[in-house]
Structure formats: C-alpha cells, structure tokens
Length: 248
Length: 169
Image (cartoon, rainbow over all chains, first blue to last red; front, side, top):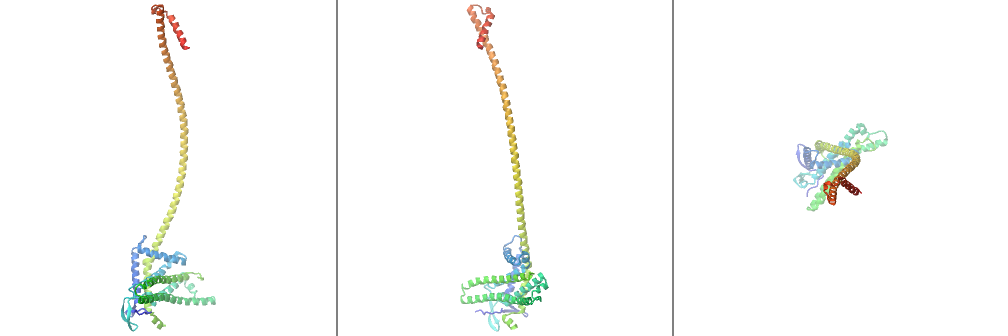
C-alpha cells in the first residue's frame, strides 16, 4: 500500500531547492494553463470558438457572483483577475490531482529514512506549501486592494485606533484575524484535498474496482467547491477591505 | 514552531516557489485571457445594446412612417372620394346634357320624319289625284261617249276637288 504522508515527497534537488511531487504537479498545472491561455489569446474574436466560449461562460458566471457582492460590474472587473485566477488554479490543480497517473506512478526511493514508494505526482493542494502560499497571497491582496481603495491610514485605522477602548480591542482582534485567515484558508483547502486523497487511496486499497468511482465524482465536486470557497472568501474580504463604510 | 513546520512539510523555498507559480499564472492569465476577454465581452455587450437601441429607434421610425402612411392613405382616400364625387356630378350633368341633346335631336329627327311623311303623302296624294283625274276623265268620256280630250277640264277639276274633300273628311 502507498504510504500516506502529510508532507509532499521530495523527488530530486536543484541545488539546495528540493522539488516535491506536489510542486511538480503545480508546475505542470501552470504550464497547461499557460498553454490554454496562449490558445485562447491566439483565437480571440468577437465571435467566440469553443474554447473562448467556455472561458466566457466561466467569466460571466464568476462576474455575476462578484456583482452580487461588489454591487457593480466596474468593481467586479477590477478585482476579477485575482479571484478568477485563484479559482481556476485551485480547481484545475485539484482535478489534476484526481488523474489516474497521480499517486499511482512513482519510484521507490528513500523517504524520511525509509525505502518507500514515492508517487511522482501529488495534488498541489495536498501540500501545505501550496495552500499557505495562496492564503498569504490572498490576505496580502486584500490589504493591498484595501490600501489602494481607501488609503493607507484609513485602511489600517480599522486595526489600530485609539478613538475608543472597545474599538481598539476590536481592531486588535481584527488584526489577529488577518493572520488567522491565512491558517483558516490554507488548512481548509489542505484538509479537504488531503482527506480526499486519503479516502481515494483507502477505498482503492479495499475495493480496487468500481467502488472508488463514486468517490472520484465526489472529489471532482469537492475540488470545485473548495476552489469556489477559497475564491469567494477572498472576494468577500476584498469587498470588505475596499469598502469605506466601517460597518462592512 | 520550526519543528511543527518541518513535520507539516512547510518549506519557505517551496512556499515562495508556489507563490511565484501563482504570480506567473496571474500575470499571464490577466494579460492573455482575462483582460482581452473582458474587453471583447464589453465590446459585444456594447454592440448588442447598440443594436437593440437601433432596433428600437428603427421600430419607432417605422411607427412614425406607418402613421404618415396612414395619414397619406386617408388623405388619398378623401381626395379619391372627392374626385369620384366630382366625376359623378360631372357625369350626371353630362348625362343630362346628352339626354337633352338626344331628346332635341330625336325631336328634330321626328319632325324631319314627319315632314318627309307629309311630303310623301302629298306626293302620293298628287299621284293619286292625277290617276283619279285620269280615271274620272275616262269614266266621263265613256259616259258621254265622247272623246276624252273634249271633256271639260272644269268638270274634271270639280270632281277631283270633291274627291279631295271626301278624302279629307
């Protein structure tokens, strides 16, 4: 049976940088998405082809969701690239993690001092480095857009104010909450995807034929939902940060 | 803390690499896909809205043209009715005139016919009178057994006058 490891397994080193299987799949996802992006860009026109239509459908749907939060299309379009990229990157990497080649193709190597089977690829979100990196980017983007929209001092006055002791305390809690967001973002995504992987491995080990299929469908859905939750939470936090009204 | 991070496999180099991966994707997708597609979608939306606006104004113009056409048609109907009414009145006058002229002409023809009949009658009567005169003469000649040339023209004349009177009665 494949050893279940909470850490992504190292495959090889480039200098002092160790390339893990989750990082490798993350790079593959990046390359595939870049290739698709180039394909879309080359054939872009007012009358869309199939690929452009799929992207436009996705964009229209996301923009409608964003409109309901931001209140207008102009604001939605301004923050759309970040939200859409987060959603697409997480969703595609989650789905790539469900491909048959992931987890089953690997090599026997020394892992944590033991000679074990090391999968060549692993779902990027089943590695905390991926989820924490995205969470940090999301939280920093919220701060960045907040500063851009309402100004540095006004934005940070949400966290640090001496107007009222209660507000000072609430602001401090809000400031701590920003760090907690990183943990909640990253561990939610990691937990769901990693648990899905473990579930698939166990089901595949117990009943190799047929039984994993419903769970695969479930994981496809989970992959989409987790990407959507991550993107939507980022969007809501951005919307709150760029709004001048302190009640929001 | 670093032990926990080590156990969870958190490595700052990998963290930064994943972040860089995301930034590369963000920049690439923003410039290759999101912005061009947003521009295209906006253009298409503007075109559709423009088309709808044009369609509405075209419909409005069509309505106005319909209204003008209806007014013109009504005006044309009115003119046509007045022309027809005028033509009917003229036709009535003309018909009355023609009938009157025809009546006059008929009267003329009737009179001419009566004149012809009268002249024919006169001619016939003259012929009849002449033949009657010759018959009377021959009858008288036989009665008196004389030569017809010797019969008195006066008597003959009286006989003819008598016959004419009888005829007239």
